[in-house]
Length: 498
Image (cartoon, rainbow, N blue to C red; front, side, top):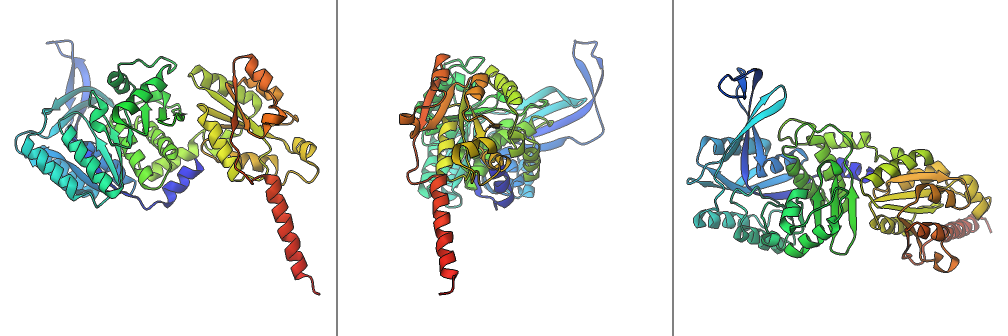
């Protein structure tokens, strides 16, 4: 989470071109005190306030990006009507570029009107035309897309199945992005994902992923890897992100690596616009230089914020930074006792997560450690790192070690985003910890192949597996200390008068 905080505090914000279905969200508020005598329905008595208009669909993605400080160009279609003019006014006032929006006199602007009482939606009325665009409008839209191709390196495609994102338009986006060496993130709705071929990342929800692949994902997410693999084959993708509501998100790569991030427990108030926020945050983070894993964690955090609000809502950097500080994934919150860890492991295993375990001294964190821990995290959904206490390090490596205290070492390891939990153990081996946690995977470095991995027999006895991580050659804490000592000796010799 520390990396995400630095990203939010330091990024100036990328340029993102948002393409898709424009929607005007309208809210009418009032109170319900009785049921109609004409039918078993509530009677909503509207209050005296004016209807509240908000940006929805592609326009809500743009609004989220603008709140994060991105420069945004919008591409879409509105009708020649008051709703269309309202959307253009709201986008312009928020700071978005609207030169890419085409006015279609043959169709209305999509509008969703929500009736709200006591803070809850009681009815939604949709006014829309979801037929494909006329050829002339589609050609205008494609021309606008091509004209914007030199303005940004990241494209966000918001498909609400209202007729804008057809294969010819999508392929124009792909051609424009490739011309700039850009990337494309898509929130899909098409029944077959072949039309998105050429995109970088797709973000279907669970139901959409099941429909597109004609496969089912089990209650404990059984079969989700097969679903993700099918989606990547359909659209020739390097990665796919399946959003799972209260169960978080599942990221799969064509290389076989995957990442499961769980949603922080919170009350779900309204899921309106959560997909828009995910698309916006992924696009903003990737455009700001974040890794895909960082972008997914940020999107998961933002989705958890917006479901606690009524209606389509945009999150700010301040919202996200506040959530990071409160997050159980903050570095200090990751360092736990073994008793607490046993409870957390049971909870995660109950959600169908694959538990990965590794251990070590981690006295001076170096690139070899970072690559090793990243490898370990790729072997499952939750990574637990057990760190030797100061007493056990001294017993293993001598009185001059450790260089850093156990708390300092735990804190540094916990700051890595792909580490989920850190526990400090006092024994010379992690056998007791392994016996109590029973991880699905035990990871050690390849250098343990000949020495024999401590705990292998235990883990394999209950059906777990041992995975050996490749080593970064020429890098170790001992070698780093040797170099520091050698350099200090040379400098001392040079400073001594002859």
